[in-house]
Image 1 (tube, rainbow, N blue to C red):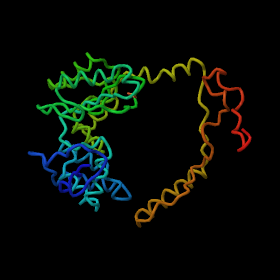
Image 2: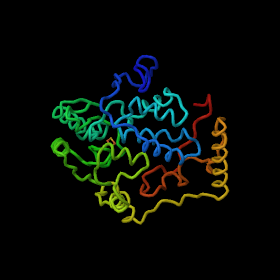
Image 3: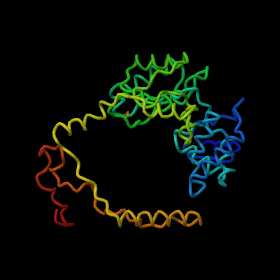
Image 4: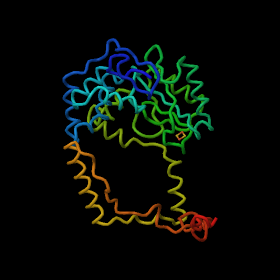
Length: 316
Ligand code: FES
């Protein structure tokens, strides 16, 4: 159990994270009037103010490098929440940091597939080189190292991200070189996606603001070329075999009823009522409409007939 950021130590606790909370950091950049104006710009994007909390926490990190006690108070004041409510969110998601973060956040996937292919060896090697463990920052403030659960890029395993940009199919040596370059102040190009900036920059992007100096630079980052081979293997094979997925049916009446339910939810949230249940998704079935054994690409390997239904109770 540990105190929430923004709470007096020991007066509010959570069981989500037993690690110690960094006391108020020294020499933090202040949350300025400009930050407050940007926070209000974020709030204006949502029909219900509290929905703005997640991007606002990223905004705080873009200024101070983590969710500081000051940042928790700032969000609570702007959104009309208690500090405990803000702290409960900030301590639940791993992308919100509870201690000052280095210039770059290096995340090493140690989940199953990456680990089997060397992810844990990469993590151990970087930990040795940097002299830090999970969720710790080097003394020079250049790198925060963390191990991560699946980074949703298993087809590129083992994966390392820096400030959430991908460096695919790494090994111990390539990851060491990558981190050494970062410590020299270089910004090696990610394998795919936008060019690397830094942790505060990507936090600003996650808050919904551009981290780039002008529209041209932002466009260039979005259009930056990348190596997408492994992800596109399935598409290439489907094209070679002349296969395609069945169209997704979507009736006009179901989408309009979904919109009505969504509007009703917004109105009840404004009044502080629970969201109405029973939203019509328009489709009651589960899975696809393709009969078993006829899915594209199975080549007849699936069952010829649907599996038998479960026996009635007492007839096993
Ligand atoms: S297991 Fe590492 S990206 Fe999925």
